[in-house]
Length: 417
Ligand SMILES: Cc1ncc(COP(=O)(O)O)c(C=O)c1O
Ligand code: FES
Image (cartoon, rainbow, N blue to C red):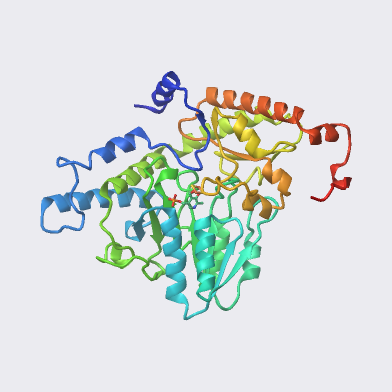
């Protein structure tokens, strides 16, 4: 089934909300699902890829290695540099803890940023408890962590720098090539979380001086629960394993390989490599189409650099409207106020706060993310619904009335309570 027929079929059966949360996760591409299903049964590659004594094992191993080649080709790496994991969370843990533990004899200082995914931030917190020191860089107002900031934070005992390629809440892109040069010159290991960029931006690891890179299949239309870590061979990067057992994945990550998941990720990578250029253009056009329909509203702001961003993510603040109320009144849209992992919290986003967005505005922000199966019709419907909901909530807002009456809200002394 092609993309258009998937969308058409969904239109017919739909009472489902319009899905605009592709940064949280993507549906599995039907081509990927088909290939995965074929692996599971007696006729497929159900064997254990580690079994060396019979055909079932050999076939499963071949399927795993095909997938490894496909993922490696997506980022121009050597297949021997790809280690399968359960997702980007595990890859981040393995990269940062693995490198910190292996290289701690050289120093105990790590550099990261305040707007990393929790998988990186919590890993760094854990390392702090173990006696490592971590510098959390603040991005500039545009959401970018600049190479000079990394340069300035470097110390003689710095062993690891971990920065994301694309931020999952605001879609802003960091210049990993320039940061890689700085790290390489000082022989500091550079880890990049590419969960949001792989398959959305071209990545060339033969050219870019990244030592470790995390990937997640479910952000590229593959299944959840599978990911990979790129571990550079030249110059060789060493890691202390975090999972011990049968010595799979050259000792870096033990555990029977999940053949069907791995085949799914490989197929997802193969498809996205072929379709990325056209897909990015299409998604950018959808994003612009959406933004064109809401940008003339008053007090509507895009968070993060407009120029340096992936096409699929748009984080917008609607001043004088409370984000949770807005989501509640947009029941026909599947959107979020920030990342999926923190969507249960009513705290304003730590990412937006780090950009200097004030609490009220951070509270009134929504993330729209567009993807492979998004249609123009969905975008038009979503934009109309957003306009309607924002206007209605503002009608009910005393603060909006005051703003419209020209009262400067910053000068008001609110009663303490
Ligand atoms: C930037 C980033 N890193 C890591 C993850 C976690 O990936 P996974 O769900 O594969 O563990 C995500 C997913 O939300 C992400 O956006
Ligand atoms: S799924 Fe993206 S933040 Fe957790």
